[in-house]
Image (cartoon, rainbow, N blue to C red; front, side):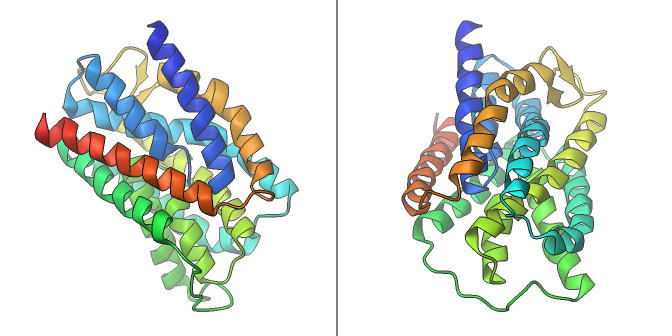
Length: 269
């Protein structure tokens, strides 16, 4: 129990800092850590990944509030993007949660590995992004489709969506600090409906860990939040001062190791 508590507290420190600093959301760290711990404790693969994803989204609800407030103070949020994308983000998040609840645990792990691998490659090899416009599209359907897919894939694997929204906003000529700040706001609107959906979808599921509310595990959420809520604020403040290129490469390597560990755990051992 002591090791479990310390592990989740450290996870909170690291995930919160990354969430505020890079705008990628702490879920990409929280999900695999929660997954490995619950699996080692003997819980079924049928529920472990769902609990990890749902708990991650619930954590992001709280950590994003701290990060969002910091970015708003720094004037890093494009309110026009938020207005045009929020409907699609929320719709996609709910659909992603519903879809995940119907997918077997092993398939959900495979989806996480695939998307995390693509995210890590994008981070590692990303150069100057070519822009395709001076702003996001004006067409409602295009905006709804883009934001809907961001919400869907994010809720499906338990992340705040920054790994998708930051590069897309950069393509539409948004400065990096503004893309990160806007992504933090969008992350809240991904996480909140997603977490609520996972609570209701997991109400009657058997074999969940103690202290679970639906698929959301309150113990994991409380431990990670207790440290991440502070470091998310610190990360947001540092985001305007630190060059992110080296940090992105380090984080990309970390993600590759995480994906490799998941592959070994499921398909080799």
